[in-house]
Image (cartoon, rainbow, N blue to C red; front, side, top):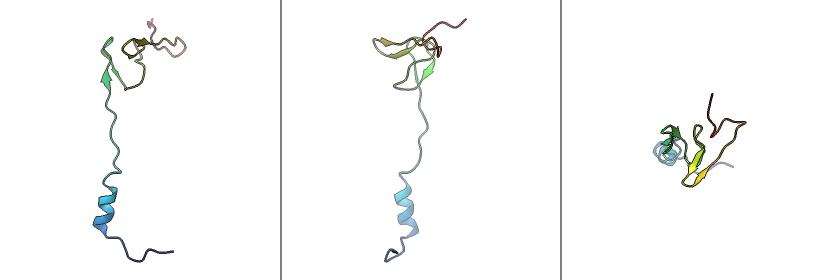
Length: 66
């Protein structure tokens, strides 16, 4: 089934104006000073949020590197 009228170019562009992707904005880890994504553990220190640090030796998160 076809729409009754053709949608204008400007109306299509206005609808698509909200479809743009945004880049990621990393924050800095307060312990190591390295960039980290929000709601993710820092690779160097394992810092997630205040009062929560995790250690995953298999992935190298929160452990000292030799």
